[in-house]
Length: 436
Image: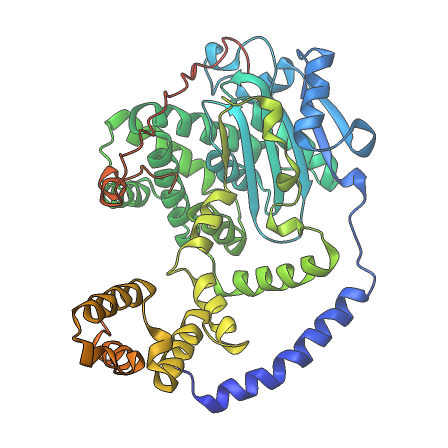
């Protein structure tokens, strides 16, 4: 429990802190130029489809640099790693990339059926990227295996840096391996397993095949996953490749926390500052999703497959037991306490002052009816008495979910249960052949 003295000190400090925040907000803020945001478009898109992708990204061609990605570009990294069927012959995947200085990697995907936002975020770490916001999508459903190529090309142009070619190849191998693993154990389990093993390999500096095998076994037990010998061998080979390169462990941890929906204490205060700043500026912060917040899902249609790494963090923030909620409730207490507690206190005080004021309206109606009955049964002598006395005596003695609707609740209220069943929309989950 927080002592009253500490609460008083916080209440004195908050106005000063808010004043300082407002002062900082009023100062000029350096913003990245539009040229630091890059869009890649699949070479086989029609002009109409290209226009729709700009609309989905929430930008226009004159506000960003644009790169056309061809199937030859994808083959540069995928040949020898992915099958011909996975590489395909045409390119439809698009990307919108915004390098950032903090916040790890945040990704949103639309209409990509083979890869998820978590897979892309994790593989971007392997390629050498540490902080950026990414939107990868297609106007039609595609596998998305080639999307990573366009993203890496966009990041290099937007950031002005060149990623290591071997690391880019390792990232592509990781994406394909994770995708193939997902076919047998599911996308979430595949991504979780790969992230767990990679984190252990990088954090502990594992390079020996036997040590990496132990790390894979431990992760498989953690997620209750059974792997075949072939799958174990592929993952081990991949991790031995990844172990050759130097990675920033802190950046790795930040992105993995994003994927797991964990809000660290430092992340909370960063979000708190962004929230305060956004109240006065009306803007969003690049480390809080940036360009991802400007996407228009309606452009891809009602049946589009949408997936974002931000969803995990939002879920954690909404969780009543989450760090954000706990601190938010604390500050609510500082600024006036819990509203429900105040209402209860007010009700208790009013009950002490005037018990009749707290009477239930239904109970009062019952007492009035009882009074009428008593008056009818009175003798002539009793009718001469003051009715107010009877009323006083009677008053003194008369104190007496996105979720499925529960049918019983409606019936209990005297109505019939409402049928809320709706027909599910059939979604074609198969990727377009030869389109990536």
